Amino acid sequence: MTLDLHDARERFEESTDFTIGLEEEFAILDPETLELAHRYEDVKAACDLDEVLADSAAGELIASEVEIRSGRAETFAEAVALQAERRARLFALVDSMGLALGAMGTHPWGSYLDQTIIDTPHYSRLREELGYVAQRNNTWSLHVHVGVRGADRAIVVCDRMRELLPPLLALSANSPYLDRRDSGLASVRSEIFTRTFPRCGVPSPFVDWDTYAGFVDLLQRTNSVVESTQLWWSVRPHHSFGTVEVRICDAQTRGEDGSALAGLIVACVAQTAIDLDEGTAAAPLADREIEENLWRAIRYGLAGKLIDFRTGEEVETRAYLDGLLGWTAPARAALGIDVDLPDEGGSERFRAAVESAGSLEAAYRDAVAETARTYGRSPT
Image 1: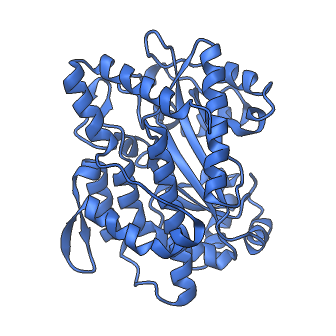
Image 2 (image 1 turned 45 degrees about the vertical axis):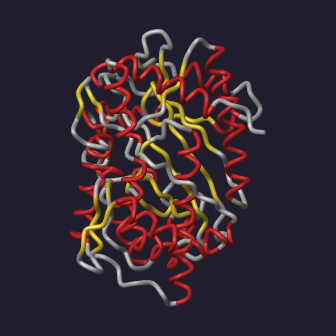
Image 3 (image 1 turned 120 degrees about the vertical axis):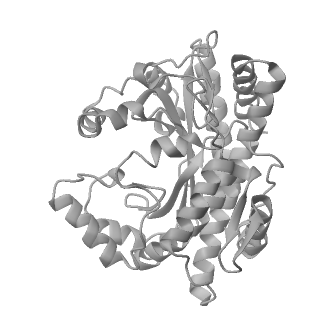
């Protein structure tokens, strides 16, 4: 994924509105011990023998992770169906290899000190450039791509999506444990990834393509980046696909939660574009306001409160998300997206499971089994 900004701009100019791509990351596990298994190369080699998985399974830096991608879909229903097929194939293949897959933002006790990096020139270069940061990043997430036509329009959509990152993170927060301890956070993954990687977290607004391209060109000329994938912001224009990519969310333990979360993200991007086209978009929030809500999402997840800065009041996070459902109703109707949000966040569910099971290991084993049931089933 090079930094040819002219080609990237043309890709956005030729993009199709609201095409969809889903990407889900899973931890590769030893099913007996539930320890992280650094077996990506073996899993990928097996995937390459499958006509579907060969093009849809990919690596993401660390050898204890595999990502599954839906590929481009014209509708949300098609994206979900494609992803369901790929999920089922991946889980069946991994099971046949004597491995398992986990889906949370962090492994509850997996040590980054034991982490290994995928042995390719690309990832070896990142290991050299990032040092400790690459070693520390044993985290897993969900990414959603939404096609947006027009380079300037895509940048403005990214700018406006910034204030929606906190509620989307709150909904997805699913990483309370790290190093066998309750971190006290709903999404400790966010503190590991978005606070340590360069060019990460919530970007400043760029306003238009030329301003964005000028900054990226500067990074390239000053030897900060050599490819667009080194722009790790939580929302970004994807140069190769002509999409707005939302990258803020924790991996989801249950397959249906992953699909619901993706549906809301798609609807938010689409509604943002629609409001901009119709001239009805509200004035954007300031950086400091977005950061305040981001901390609340990291700390409390779905169980907390966010600030409605336009009214100056605290709002229960679930009520805030209900507001997003109401706001996105036109986009969801147009795109055929029906979102059923969970009543309880992943972090709250896992904490309750630890207390009920009496041990962290037993709760995680149940979570891995739930992931296998809900992601590994064949699509109907």
